[in-house]
Length: 464
Image (cartoon, rainbow, N blue to C red):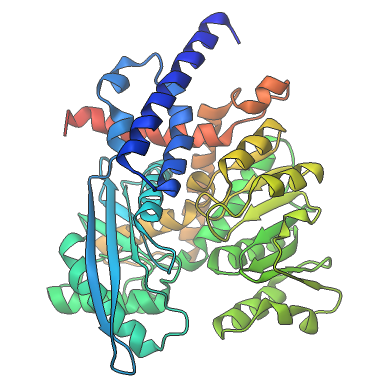
């Protein structure tokens, strides 16, 4: 590092500290949001150090302050006739490059901090796709687990009775997320259509019968593996013959496992909140189908060894200690901590590719990258889902449905473009360079690439 570059780095570090101190004061007790902003700020302040146009316009501070946060009461009746009261939110973070776009999450862990972090991340993720979409996120602390279809319908209808005021095809286009699948999207869309007496593509992830897109269900998990494949090819390696540990057993995890196995890899694990399965023979498409059926019927992964001999169930544990070439965290935020990172490093893992949003803690991220492990951040690696959602918006606008083959090609192309952007802004940088093993810093590449697109649009609009 030259003396001049060292001075810039020291200056940007000081700027980051001052910026984060102000952010913490304005957003007390919002740990998830602060973590997400800090990761981006560390990269972006270095990038803008010699670019006064971004500094003078306070672009980073403006992106880290949502355009608006809508909070509302959601009342509904359960099957016993009791009145229940939940809280709903929609965080509209930034619409500089297009309508707000991002999922709805129904889970007991949902709060304002979690949704602000997700909306902030979504802003950069959507920018990386190259499609005209801003960033938003929403949801409720309602937990659909254990609820009847009738209860979920009543909740969704009540939720949409308020949300409809704040969304629209040119304003804000929500989608599904944790706890919001095809059933919930159907109930939400039906209520929107009833209230507005209009058919708009105002939600994505819809059923194929009413404006949904082929490949949408598979797109996030498939996209993670497509991005991973590009990371490996950049290192002159191929996915074929690699082994992977994957966390989660939901939509993203199972489709990532399916695609990884299809491309010649061996999937060793999947997990849920109670533990993980380890199958040394590999989890193939047939086994993935059993897992999907088991989870959809409310069953446990602990029954897996009874179905498939040679496998093991590890109660109350996470899969990161299993030896592997690749790790794909596809469950939830902050699931891969520093101890997990050390286990992966000790097992000489080649790459970690995030299928979930911010599943790697800050200290784990730094440890992996410092030790030469390739880390594909969620805002890049799992952008396939929102990319196909954007393509669903295009299909709805044209009143057409594209073929599955065309959409698979579009998805592959978008993930390659995202990878190219990450390489452009992350090559020759990152913690590993300090140790003499300079790998592409995909975290920095994604943060800077996404920021630049949003920031340039904001500059064009003036101070708004």
